[in-house]
Image 1 (cartoon, one colour):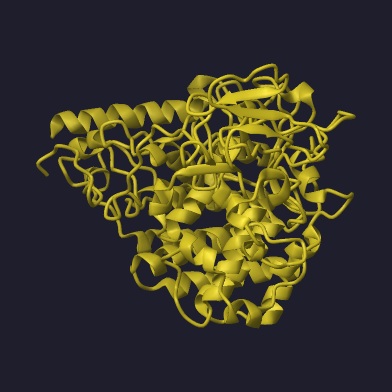
Image 2 (cartoon, one colour; image 1 turned 180 degrees about the vertical axis):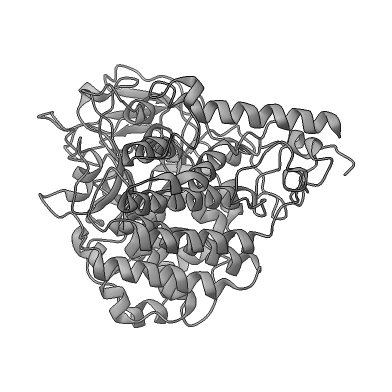
Length: 576
C-alpha cells in the first residue's frame, strides 16, 4: 500500500506542475500560488481556456465509424478490440484543473468575472463527468482537489452513475444560471449549457430506459425542459440561405451564426487545420446502404414503398430523395466547391456511397489542410433532442413536432411529419434496424425521430453513442453493405448515358473508365452480384452483457488494490 500511495503522490505532484506550467510566463516561479493568482478576469479566462481541448476534433469525428459508415480503419468499438490492459480513457488531470479553479476563484476581485467563469468551470466539470459516465458507467465523483494524504478519497470506490449524473445536472443548472446570455460561438454561454444539458440528459434517460436501469423519466424530462427553454428563448434558428444550406453549413470556413451555438475553429491564418477532408478520401470512408435507406422520398413517402427498392441501382435509388442526401453523399450532379464540372461516383469509397459532408474545395484535400469549422453544438440537435425526449416520455404532441422535427424538415424542403400518421403505420424497415425500440402507441413516431436524427447528423460524432444508448449494439455486427450491382458489366454512375465503371470477372478489355475485378477489387454480397461488401474479411461480434461500457483499466484497479471494481463481462486477469 505504501508503494501505491507513493505512486499517487508522484502523479498528483505531476498534475500540479502541469497545471502551473501554463502560468509560469506570467509570474515569477517563487511567487506563483493560489494567493497570487485568480485575481483578475484575464487570469480566470486563461486558466479555463485549457478546458476547451476536451471537445472532439473534427479530424477524429469524421472518421468515427458506426452502423452508418465505415472506412479502412474501424475503431476498437467496431472491431471488438477494447482491452482492460490498454484502456486509456481513465484520465483525471482535467478534473483536477477544474476543481483547482473552483477552490480558488474566490480570490477574484471582479464579481462579474467570477460569476461568468465559475459558470464556465461548472459547465466543463459537467462535460468531463458526462464523458466518463458515458464510457464507464459508475465512476468516482470528486468535487475537490485531492492531495497525496487524502487516502480515503484517493482509494474510494466508484460512485453510482445516478449520483454522478445528478451532480452533472446540478452543475449544468448552476452554469445556466451563471453564464452570459450573449451569443458567442467561441465560448460557452447559457445557450451552450442548455444545449449540452438536453444532450446529456437525453443520453442518460434513454440509456436507463433501454437498459432497464430505472428512473429514466427524470432525465428525459430534464432533457425536454432544457431543450424547450433553448428553443423558446435562445433566439437561434436553422441556417436556410442558398440552395444547399445543409451542405454549405458543413463546408463553411466560418461557422454559420444563425444555427451554430459553439464551434471548433480551424484557420489557415492561425495555422490550425483539420484532416477531415483528407481522411474521408484517404481512408475510403463510405456510407452504408442501411444509412441510405433511412432517407425518405422527397414527397415524404418511404423509399421501401418504391417497387424494386432492395435491388435498385445507384442512379435510380438517389433520384427524388430527401434533398439532404445530395448534400451529404456524392450523388449524380455533385459539383465540388471551386469546381465547374461535376464529380462522378467511381466507387472510390469502400461502399460506393462517398461522403461530401465537410468537403470544401480540392485545395483543402491534403493532410492537415482543412479549415472548415466544426459545429460542436447546433440548434438542429437541440430540436431533435426535444422531440426524442418527449416521444420517449409518451408526452409528445403535434405542436412539439412542429417546433422541432418539422422545422428541420422545412429547412430540408421535406413535408411535415404527422404524429398520428407515424404512429398508425410504423416503418417496417426501421423496425428491423431498431428491434429493441419501445413497442407501443408511440413506436412509429420514435422511429421517425430516429430517422431524422440519422439523416440530419451523420459524421457528427454521436451515431455510435446513439446506438449504445438505444441498446442496439448488435447492429454493429451487420455486414457493411454498399451500392447494388446486378452483375458484371458497364455502369453509368451519373445518368449521362456514358459508362463510368466496369465490373468484370476475367478481363476488363479496352474499357477506359474505372474497372474492378469481382472477388478481387470488389466483393459483392451474392458472389457475382449483390451489394458491395466493405471489409469482407473482418469478423465482428457483440457481447450484450459487456460491450455497452468500456473496461476499467487494469492498472488503475491494481493501484487501488481492487477498490475500483471492473465493469461486467470484462476479464482483466485480476483476482479482485
